[in-house]
Image 1: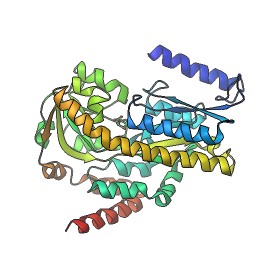
Image 2: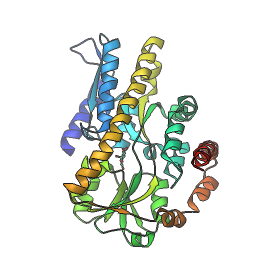
Image 3: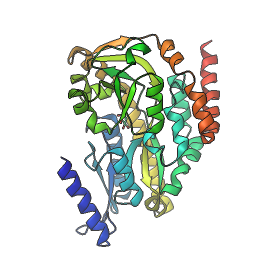
Image 4: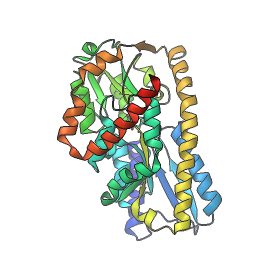
Length: 340
Ligand code: GCU
């Protein structure tokens, strides 16, 4: 698989060096638009991207053909972001954790217990006007977020049961390649092992790590439930995934074309979110009844208490996140009041 990936990336580079624009096809007149993502072909994000493809081709099919590359075929999220940065490919789906090194405002989403309800999370992310200001933060890096995808709520799962934060002590837990995620897992008392998503299954299987943290789809769609049998609902993060586009490509579109790509992105989010809700329910059922995963309800407050200083420490270290953090707090409060 690695060899294949390398060969493909090499081919992309050779095309770029030969001055063929990196992404244009010689045979057809159509501009090939390449999108990379890390999930399987049944994952909500892939289904959302199929909608993106359909809409773009329905409206601009004489000029553009959209090709979707799942399963990290073009490389891990970090690698694929770099390919998008240079324009070797045009779009990538990646979690905000992977964007922290390009624009530190994205660190805010790695804060444990940032959103206090799903409603608040959805309202913040669904406010496109507000989020567009955040999305502009990577312009200097050469790419821009077009839309977000729901990636649910992240919790710990491992080879042995985790009932309390104390059970995390001494465990080696995989985290995304993000400094803020490393700090968060350390604050919980575990040892953090950053690695790409595609490496996690084997790392758990071979005992290189004891577990990881993710949403329920990681158990089924990525098969982690085969190797880690205990999933604890401590719910420490809601981290969105982002559809990211090469800025030169986006700026090179006519205003009508840009409109079509942006509309396609919004439609892809609608499909993704509907699929997400369905698939999470299915994933719980499959994990529990077919894979033998035990879901553990824990005292979430105990986990919150364990990392209660982390939000303030992160705000002290990175003033760039303060404004977005305050905005999120206001929306958190709105939903907290509605519940009273
Ligand atoms: C989820 C998320 C991905 C992320 C992955 C990970 O699957 O949707 O964007 O890369 O978790 O933990 O690496």
